[in-house]
Image (tube, rainbow, N blue to C red):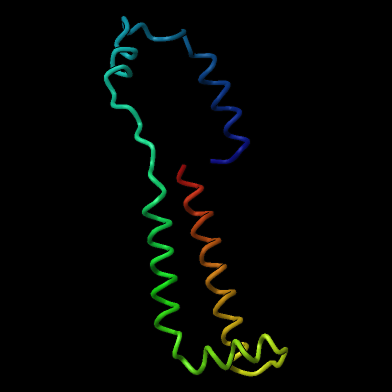
Length: 107
């Protein structure tokens, strides 16, 4: 549908609307019987992220590519390992950003 159609449809529905449908309290009773919305617990997400970061750090601790790239990046030299480390950090940050925005849309 086009935005211009929305106004026409809205006007048509308003002209045909007789008022609320009497349901004799049915809607209110149904809403009272629905279970309460449970609040999400955040600790599993943070625990999983921390465990994943620790496992990744332990796995890459002995990697010569990571050690060389980190050392050269800190010293200001732009080599292939330093660029690889920088691109990996940027990629992980972008993935976290995209995941956060996607999760925010579901709430």
